[in-house]
Amino acid sequence: MPVMGDLTTFLNARWDEEEQDLRGHLGKALVQGYLRHNGERLLADIESKRAVLRRCAAFAEELDVHPNGLVSPRALLARQTLRLLALPFAGEDGYKEEWRP
Image 1 (cartoon, rainbow, N blue to C red):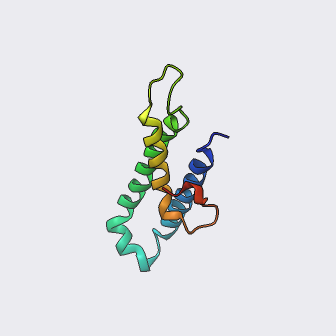
Image 2 (cartoon, one colour; image 1 turned 120 degrees about the horizontal axis):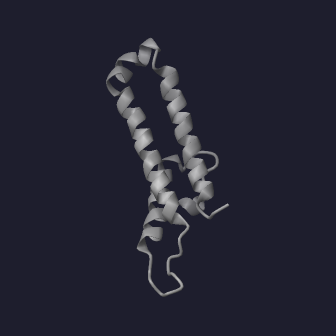
C-alpha cells in the first residue's frame, strides 16, 4: 500500500462514520432543528474534504525530487494537507502518531 494509503483509508472511514451519524440523526426531534439549518452544510463539508483528499492522494506518492533533479513541492504539500485533515481524529483508534503534522 502506498505510504499515505493508510492515512487516506483512515480519513475516509472517519468521514463515513460522521456522515452515517449525521444522516442517522436527521429525523430525530432533539437535533432536527439544528440539522434543518446546518445538516446540508455539514454533509457538504464532508464531501469537500473528500474532494481535497482525492486531489492530495493523487500527488502524495510522487517523489519529492524527481530523477531529473526537479523538486516537486506538490507531493510535500499533498502529504502535509492529508496530515492536517487527519489531525481532528488524533485521539481516535487507528490514528498513527507518524501522521501528526
